[in-house]
Image (spheres, rainbow, N blue to C red):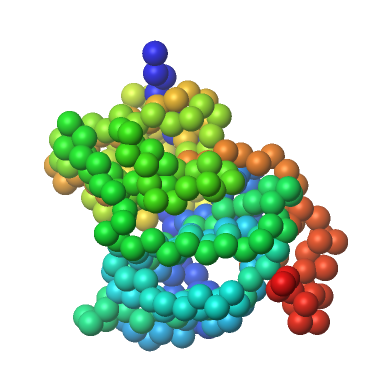
Length: 303
């Protein structure tokens, strides 16, 4: 029999500036690496109607020891990397890049014809055994992402993972993650099975929902870096991130008048030391020093 997970805590994304001057909101990563969030490191929400806030982009920069997952909701993002990949991803498209032993790439937001841009970037850690694997890159177009419609009326775009026998196009990822774009209609409930012991996080894109309506005890809430108190069972709106406990094998989400859209990500914790500086994530400080020295010496990208 399935057991429903409780929410451990929730918080709001925090405004920041990254790259060459891109205005965004950071949902994960401002706390540094956290064992409770393992294997997830960072989640950025870049959402703007003002081109000057995103056109500076993310010029050429290195990555090693982790994966970046870029999901575009509105507008377009041009990209290129040291493996020779070039292209543009638009609304509904995704880029899943495993940096492994080292890759240098750039992402340059271009927005849409109306000047609107909206996207998410998730960073996922790699275990020690795979940190120096050969880099790989996957571009997934919107038309290749299946959508499952449940009896409850909820719609799930299955990017990575499996829902009702439908498997997403991103497969063979080390942390065995799920990445789901979920829309729950008004006055509805979604029940979704998750793997017991895996980290599970939800990020609200629109509307509002109850992510833990069955519990009445209070939970700690982080809002813009300040620890507050908020009762479990709260209605969570846009730019809220929800962290579930790792035990139990189901999450339950319910809505009221407006429904909700959110991203659900789950993954297997790695349980290893994390040494993280900028775009490079290793296990030790010595490995970090080596990586940055190789970047300065021009030997970062392995042939």
